Image (cartoon, rainbow, N blue to C red):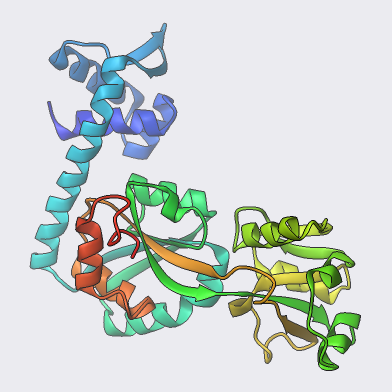
Length: 319
């Protein structure tokens, strides 16, 4: 048994049992993948895959039992590699971060700038996705860290640490009825918003769940005429007069967003928490701890290590 066989087994599951995809992911040939899997089955003495001719349809019961052990072995192998790299070249390496558009566009830039200045020999790779895509990437080991507001705390194999809390604002064009009423001292209500067409995030993004919950709790029907993944798109259509926008407060800048007015909505919608997620059991290189603390100063190395060492669902896990 060797690590290449185990990687082929794990990647076959990840690729939905498509051996062409496995070969591409592992940079090898499809016959080579088939050979590795066959040799693994012969060595273990059991069939790991449900087959229909040459097609793989799923895992057998022995295959399902084997998968978590393979995941742990490969995680520890990666940890061994990282330990060696940490001591051989502590300030050199690659840091991969997956984040939603809102986090990548508005929350992360200053931390990325400061980190790159302090760690010039670390290459930083930033990818974007939905919260659930980000969780999957962290769990699979494709990225070191995930940053999002939704979903990350729902996975027991992730340690999701709170970074900062934020609220929503309502954005309208200058001269809009709601802007005039706000300037006159009127406190915005959900009834005010329900009377207008709304533009906000797609479900599952940037606190949208709290927006829907607020209207449902008040017994009001919100009319969303447009939904988007990022605030820039929302603000564009607000400027065009399509509707009233509801966005993350961090996504509004008075200087940059001239022509728009932001109205405080923290009393209408629940506060949101952005988290950074790490795969439980993974070894973090020194500069990964440094980046997390740059982004969220309260998340020091001892705090992160305590959370990583905690059992799922305990107070230290997720703080």
